Length: 271
Image 1 (cartoon, rainbow, N blue to C red):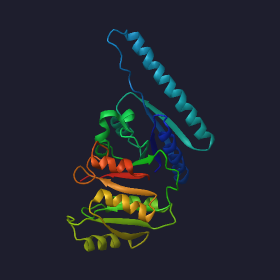
Image 2: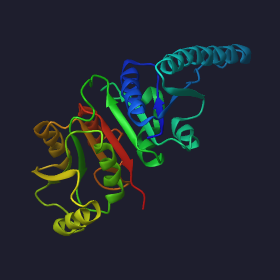
Image 3: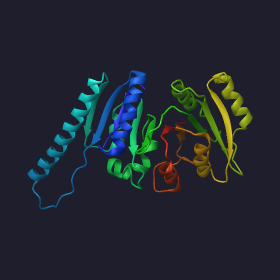
Image 4: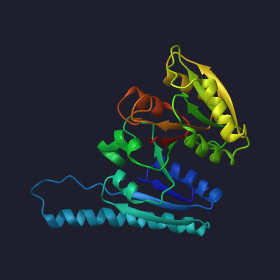
């Protein structure tokens, strides 16, 4: 996490997320980059081009003034920080920032908590950015590293993402929980015992424990597991098919993520 990109719209949720991003930067000696997307105004066709351009200039100047103050405050606290102002969509801007190791965003808990920031691209965000995405609820104020959990269906080779979760575990006093939600009729592509033995060989049984939880529905099981185990940070891996498809879209999956009261780190699974 040497380069942390913080997407901000200056809302309360974004400010809360930025606070956690600063703590991560302190712990990892990382660099912060604040990203603000300037939303172009919708104007009457009769309005002059000069007026539109002046409005855009005002929006950019206001955002730049706020970002400069934030960066100056960070630098005053010994943090390395800068900012990006973009008129493009957030996916393009993030992907152009090739050195980002982590993207941090805040959520308000409302149905359209990302709409102002990324608009119609919300449903595609997870599957179209390479860096891990840390989503922090607006009202979360706990210890990010209290109890980490990597949620796994143990159905595909996700050890590369488990390794990244274990890298976060070094900042926690507790072992990472590899949480397996067992449904009534799970589809096991790999036998769980074989998969777990492979994990143990690769990671030498260090820094993690396995815990199973039975549930009728996977989404409901995750929420119950979080409460039962006192999870403070949940890791999931997004795929274009299956449970995590379109993790932030108008669907039951999005509702589950929106209702989660703890931060979530999403890894983007690639073949």
